[in-house]
Image: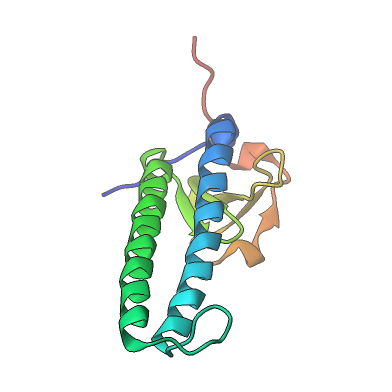
Length: 149
């Protein structure tokens, strides 16, 4: 499937909605990490305080925790689909980094944004990551969206 190309202007118009979705993604990601740590402890037979649990008690807690994790994972997957339905991609859950497929001087690149930024001001190559991003110097070098008449 060919991805939609997004202009800087379109990306910036999406930010109010993306801020809400990304807040949900990062909050749920933090919960997933916490629950996975809890799960690892339970699998070793320990509760959160380090006390040893009886096998039956441990199995019940494991079952409940796995169910909670699956619910959180389903929830985060639905948020990812919302982002992808907009034509964007989640690069990183923890920081909520979003990539927007675009064109830079005629070649495909990703515009990129993180939640503490006011607008889309950076880009990187398709095979690079957020850490390699470059500040946009001239918006004219990117896909230009003609104004609607």
